[in-house]
Length: 48
Length: 238
Image (cartoon, rainbow over all chains, first blue to last red; front, top):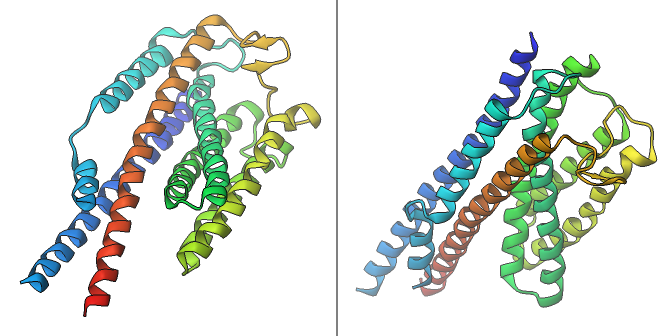
């Protein structure tokens, strides 16, 4: 692999790593929002 | 009301900080690939430095926030500081991982090897392992107050490795180059001005990225707290 190849792989790792982490945060956020909505609905039913 | 705020905060559309980070990141990429001259000894692969050093800076900064937040948590016993420490540790581990990945990719064409067990590399690996242990500890301990206290102690002790990492290249003979930005000759004296400017733009972009990620991560943790509170309320009411 030439120097350009190493530079490309390093870039891929940095940006890939950052995007993967942001994606993980988004996924966790979606799951939590779903949980929160469910809990709110349930507590609303209990209140009735 | 609190849950409404936290979920609103998470799902809000990109704000000013997002666009500022994106703009600075774009400026950093333009400077790295179109403006800064190629280093004459190492060639084009030296451009990895403009990602490698900011990742290291971000990891150290994140662990410094863990250190300060942990001290404040032990002192004030407020959950807020524990949240900051936890979120910052997670971001720090992500960027410390990137340092440990980009370092060997840079080292292979320059040193001829992927890894050497010298003081700088080994102490950085130890730092990564300490904060991995920190996150594992948080995942394993059940009681919230115990978990926060134990984690705070690890967060404080773990930070002591950072000065060791910085001075390792000065105290011992290592493969790793000596500091050029913060050197004995003065701030940035060991570097070409255009290289220093590019590095500064990249450092600013990564610092803004930390603020952006931290905001998102803290909001997520607050939502988790809200879910736990609602679950507890439901349990007691049934």
